Image 1 (cartoon, rainbow, N blue to C red):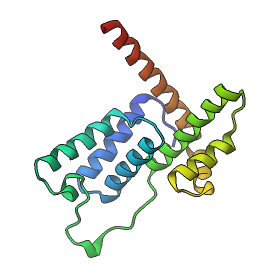
Image 2 (spheres, rainbow, N blue to C red):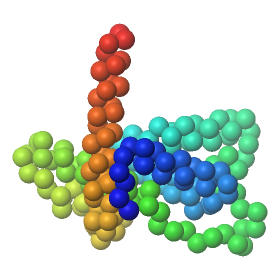
Image 3 (tube, rainbow, N blue to C red):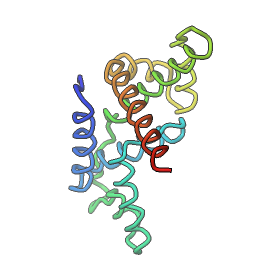
Image 4 (cartoon, rainbow, N blue to C red):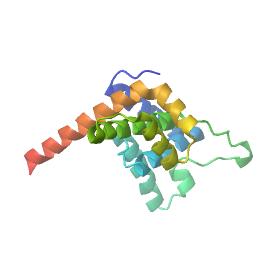
Length: 164
């Protein structure tokens, strides 16, 4: 999968959210796991994902059962679909490898991709091979996404500085 623009990424997230709201248990799990991994690694989830999670929490505060609010409800638990390894999770893992690699490059002048993969594997409780496969599959998208997010955050910070 090659994403071409920030719009493509936004559409990917919107698609997952729509699927989760329409009862796709795997999409709901992928969103939550991607959110968890991103936050655990010190990243900031995409704004659409944050809005979705906020809506879910809002529903829980309104006393909607958490499994319903988070779109994790299955009418017949015996027919729970098998979990899949979602693209959002792999993309998030690849993005974290890219972020760590860039950090090492700034700090040491060396990319140290293997070290970044090892750290992401340890931090996410995934095997090195799983992280390596996610990085190999999604590296170009993750590089684009990390760069786009960096620019977006820099613009927001600059705009906030202008306001205050």
